[in-house]
Image (tube, rainbow, N blue to C red; front, side, top):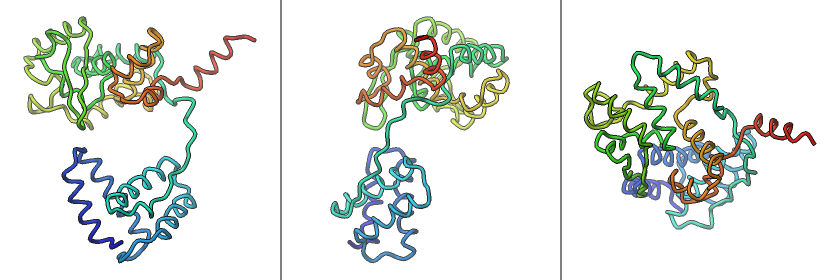
Length: 275
């Protein structure tokens, strides 16, 4: 297979796909990493090239998840080039039985209290919004003043559509918050009323809040509040199918990741059995 011509075609093909810019760039970087490993301007890719690359990643102690990520990107490129025979198998990784850095109910309450005591309550309402609906941080752009009347909205990301529901009590509080700050449009907006606040800014604010509240920084990031929602929902309703719909998952296996407990919680449950 001629590498240069196929890579150029692959790049053009990716540009036309409904994928995020970050995903497209990662795919291209991963394929170019393979070329860098070969240390030459590849004329032709062989199965030996790919097998040697896999062994190189393993020998240099890349994390299994990282190795699989690189190989998946390379295999996708080879599939595009109609070179299925050159593809290699990814590593088999045993699923994690526990999650690290899971927020406890007490830690969540302490974080909320610290955020509420700030003069600017934007972070307080942002955290509550993410947690109350199991929302991804990028989906906050759909949380607008228009949807507060009925507490529901549809999001359209990566070719998928799902419904987000916000509790009525929170909707009422957000309405008062928006009225007070004269917000009309995206509630958690940046300089432009119709664009989402910068994600890097949210990350910095959450780390600062963690220090203020005395909660480990490793536990305080936007996606962890989505995990916290999933755990609380399962503890209350024990309905993983409904939870999958709420989180926007097409596979129950994905949802199971969000409902796993921490090692400490498992230890406490085993101790409580007192057998």
